Length: 241
Image 1: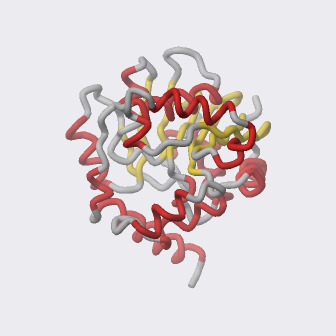
Image 2: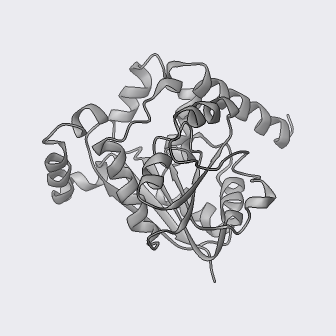
Image 3: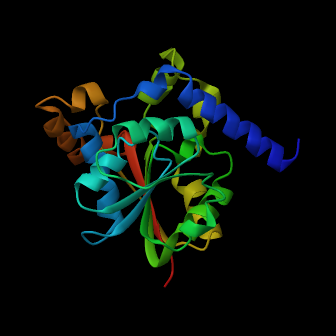
């Protein structure tokens, strides 16, 4: 199978996975769990208030709406037109949302953004080198990229993927590439510099959204032996000016 056909088959499976299973019903509501992910991505992106941001792999908008609510000039890029339809049904902000492949983003989006952010999207991609070359095209010189991903060293993900009827290892196996080495290499191959990784948080959504969830997360982050297995990571880099 050629690389192009492999990519097309991979994209078709990912569309099916997110569009025709109950994962398509993931709530877009703003919650402490979602807001924390946005906080951490923005922290590493180091962008100014009102900056122009693109949410790469925005799905039905659960992080994109939070960015718009904070006053950023937010836009979305998503592979699935079906998920974009759900986003538009719930969009109260008039957010521009574009359908396209991360590895080959629409030319009209090239160089338009101060930052490209993404949330739990990289581990669903077939080729990280191709993906980051596409992502790098979206940001202006001096712009940043910042992606929140699961930490493969946290065993709770292995249990979740194996036990959940709505998840599959075929779709989620890229989690094992969510490590400093593969991500930093892909960023550098795309011409990005200063690659960094930082871990945070430990609780799943149901627990993080409780009144005490934030305190538990911050306590876990303060305990050195727990830091390698914190649940989430932020990968970030800069496009040279």
